[in-house]
Length: 150
Image (cartoon, rainbow, N blue to C red; front, top):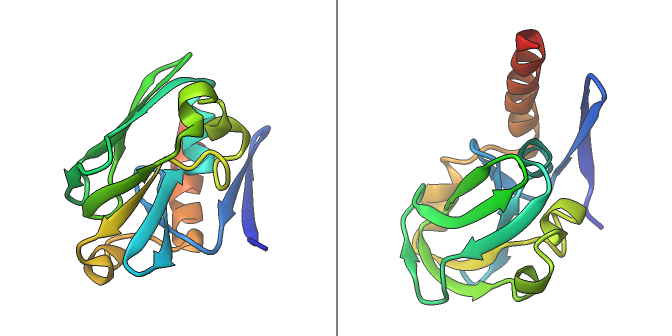
């Protein structure tokens, strides 16, 4: 069972799954073995973006480099460009998102995953990502800065 860290800022609570790594822009990466890495939006990224109306993930067979756009998500508030947290080839896209993109909001670390990437160099890309505690600290800084602007 996945464990979570939690952060509450003002009236918002954000969860961070401890079994994965995070791109600074709010994308998680979960290694699954055999060079495969499942990816999705963090709880903070999906809450900040608002209700997801549409999600488009690059099709199977698409090669992406670390930081390349791997998906785009339209919400009621904004459009989100999702950077690849790992370089490689898209080998699977979550089929549920076509009919139920709201799964990203409802279960960002489970049913709301975006894609699976066959990583070209997981070890090198992992070194560029944050663990759950480091990402929580980054989110704390970002969320507190947003609160000061209000």
